[in-house]
Image (cartoon, rainbow, N blue to C red):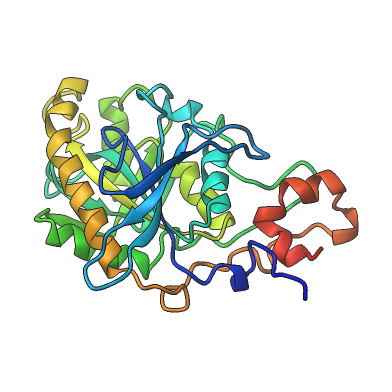
Length: 304
């Protein structure tokens, strides 16, 4: 009997939580039986070795989980230097089905104070095109739906766990993703406020787009550290770091609370089947190298 393709639904029946940590969140101490896993991908090298382990859960078996520090060990990569494709591909290699990405952000709204947590449901892309934002290309054309870029089923579970941690939580709203690494000008900050956006960060895109192409349910846990520069004064690294410690502790508690809320099976919390019907290139025109490169992304819909 032929085994199912590793990206096929038949092979992805158990929920595995992936966590990508942003500024300040460089490890997950709660992971039990943790091991470091170094991976290679068709898209290069991820930011760091992955930590693979289990998160404890009351009254349930431990949850398989995978952690990666987005900016590398010692925070060495600028937002525009991160190999987002390798990071997401590695998560897929390790069996992740649901992905929570933790990011420090600036607030564009008075009611979202430093120290609050935000679960955005939309993004506005203001990056400059230097980031590889798709697994497709080089002979394979594909278009996935991205109108609802975060998972409507996963996001409320993260929000509930965040509230249980004692955080003030805001659900919904748009996150502007800027190139960085400099913070906004005052004029830019006011422009983004005129868009109706709630927060601004530097890393959610192309992370969320690639997660969709990899068929990972995605939620962003945004940690508000400052008011950008529209409020009173310009942002400083010192001001951001002053708020960071409390935010990170709330994020750690949120992730533990989320683990307790996640079901065992993906049938109870589906991930997006995003690439079904997404590939435009005729199969007979997809070469061997392209098939090998994209096997974990679209191999289950192309056939062997």
